[in-house]
Amino acid sequence: MSGLFITFEGGDGAGKSTQAELLDAWFEERGYEVVRTCEPGGTRLGSALRSLLLHGTVGEGFDEVGAVDPRAEALLYAADRAQHVANVVRPALERGAVVVQDRYIDSSLAYQGAGRVLDIAEVRRISDWAAQGLWPHLTVLLDLDPDTAAARRRARGGTSDRLESEADEFHRAVRSGFLALAQADPDRHLVLDASEAVDELHTAILASVAPLVSNAG
Ligand code: TMP
Image 1 (tube, rainbow, N blue to C red):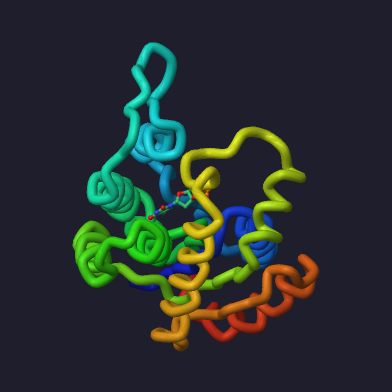
Image 2 (tube, protein in one colour):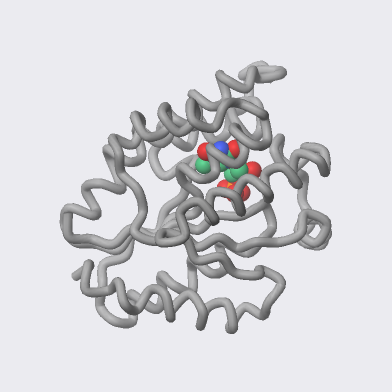
């Protein structure tokens, strides 16, 4: 596979989308084909699963699903991932594109593993199976204190989704989960303090991305 696969991870409100968009623009200015995508979502099936997972419904006229069992939740995220990798990510990488993605397997390990307290090794096995063993070349972890992240989300306005509405304790466990994953696999991770300025974060990300760009094109 000749493309380049970069994922952004971190708690809700850490600024992943902003940095992913800046990186997407940086590659496009240099003439690369960039596929900017996200999980959950990124396919039609994924959009329906995203609605179910974040809002408990697939739309008007569909009764709210109520509480979702943690294992069911883990499988739904894995189903989204299987569809997305098979239909979007792998084909893009095979034609040499750069895939810049919000969230991937680490989110399942941090949210369903550390957050919902499922066995992380089991969640990893399910996700790895769903993704047919595809891992990113680089994962940028935007680390942010959950209180600051919650304040950012409040300032942004709008309603909170199911995960965002979880207790502080859940968000703290997710943060620790992400940091533990980065520590266990430092070669794949770039960990940044997400309270830094947007342009400083972008510069730091480019410093890690530049040595990888010969992968794509
Ligand atoms: P976001 O797209 O706004 O970041 O929202 C996605 C939410 O889904 C976020 O709260 C994290 C959560 N999530 C999981 O719990 N497990 C996963 O595997 C993924 C990809 C996301």
